[in-house]
Amino acid sequence: MFSQLSAVLDSLARHSGKDPRPVGGDERRRPTVPRAQIATAVRLLQGHLQRQWRVSELARAVSLSESQLTRLFRRELGTSPAAFLWRSRIERMAELLAAQHLTAADAASRAGWASAAAASRAFKRHYGVSPRGFARDLWGEGGVPSHEERPSRAGRHQNDGAAALR
Image: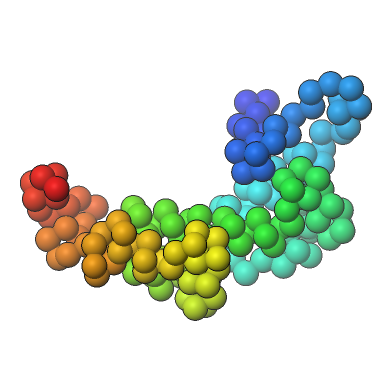
């Protein structure tokens, strides 16, 4: 149990840029329950990106009020639950574009965006390049691999030799 909580806190530290563990002084007196609840909320959001979350639903799921959840999110992660979800979806979209060679619309849908246009605007705002431009930089002019480079159903390149020579 402790190692799982430690792993979640490490994850929180990576996302926030801060170490959420107490370092001494007044920090030691702070209860750990809110941190556990925020860690649970983070796991819920990242584990269910496709879900159209409401702050009230997330707060209920971790036994906090909406205002408590938002306050603790800001204190522990430096952002609101909605902004955290927004960033998590954008990052997932980038991962999908890079690893699974999807179109921008498919990646947006799989990352939980209801609108491909909204996802594209958010992606460009966050990364400074459109999803299509991001994919084009990775895969060439079309933004997705050519037929020869496209992964087969087994997830392997159909022409591994040609792709390895590039």
